Length: 320
Image 1 (cartoon, rainbow, N blue to C red):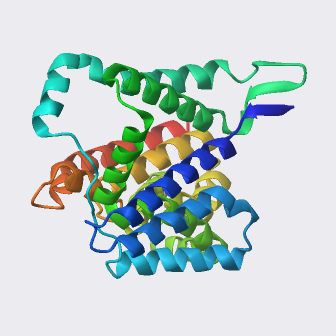
Image 2 (image 1 turned 60 degrees about the vertical axis):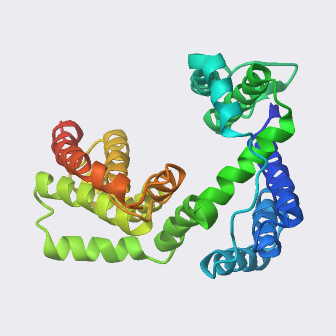
């Protein structure tokens, strides 16, 4: 069945937004590096707009250019046309807690869409692409939330693009890290890192003991996530190295429990690493904290406690 709303449509919308951001950046004379900054956002837009049709070599060159522009300081902040602080405070006072409604709309519609839109269709057409149902539902929620925010604030759509540009430039090149790191996990898995992990684990850890095997998998997920910055990047490596051959193959554990709690262990690592820039470094930048690691310092005790609990749960629930 053909879907009316696909994840590709959201990619195109994201790409168009980034392209407009690139144009605005190039036109901003207050930005000391407007041309290199504009090129950065334009190249990222290309990935969303035509990434599927590009030869792998071209995509790779774009990634290298993005890394070079970001790493060499080619992305800087310009002027974003924000309203005066007094105007923003007056608007916030007028709207009060209603400001949270657009954000809640994203969550509610994502949940409702994921649960109810799977079988909605007519005459051979489905409303939403089934294989990416949750992601498309999040996108629909974001669009509805944006429309609600524009209606509440009486702003024009272009103001939303300006705010998107402001946030992107504040976050800087670190905003592309989640995509990069998720891809890195697949590359590591294809390169055989998982097999190397399995060899190290079986030679150094008594994996014939279910508790030690579960602990090795959980700690490995956390540590690899800290190194790679993304639990999705660590998952294929650790699952290929320890999860499938040892937890499932040797001890006949529950695959669903392993995947769910294993990812949770990875998230514990996310709380403790600057590599997870979108969770830790970017919030510190947006909040204008003097210590860029302040978020990590506040989170690591909770992360370690959760990791210990996850190890126990993994052992108790997976080998019943």
